Length: 269
Image (cartoon, rainbow, N blue to C red; front, side, top):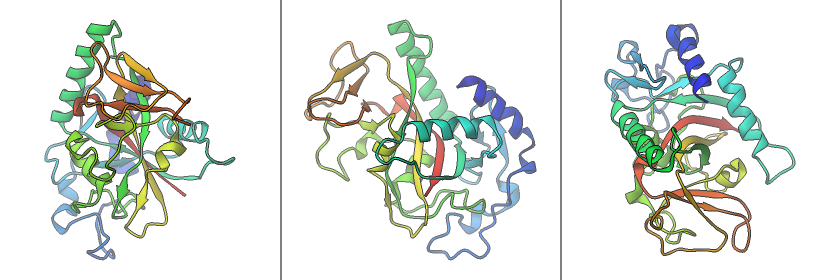
């Protein structure tokens, strides 16, 4: 995973080679994901961090998404994970676009601190980081094409809020009053499982999923529902839902915002 991100960083050193201008010309104000103040080309200056993450000099004015070329190894890696882990239908959907989600320095530092802390405790240098999918509501058409690279400001667009501010545990239970493993942030290694939670409300012809890095740490494996959880039991860092009595497909649940960050946005149909 780190090698792929390093390679992607080198490729993007000359971003202008493959990034389109993010002007919102021709898009209506209702469904455009680029505000007027965000459309200036000079405001989208990318800053590539030494740890292969991406941030902006001004996160409110810069691009949040960087398109990954179809020929790049990172695209192939994400595509392989998406297709191999699609289990609900014989053939997986076709990927339209893959974007690298940039993160603020604050969120990168928070994630890295938590990963290091868990890693020291469990004896895994990376904190047992895994990549899992998350599906949620999208009320716009961010990412549908290369002119829509800035998240919208709609409060009901959960996807854009996650990409701008990362995950927020305080929203747990707002869309659904019941959680199989309590109040946590839910992901799955099964892409089609995460797709069950996608809601497209913005008129897009595509569906969107987030591929995330999740610090699983020492997971508690459960096959039965445990909806009263608000944190993992002592000695554990996450809950791994294992297919069995109450579950058909896997789930990974974390109970702190620091344990997860979005890495890729995938558009498909």
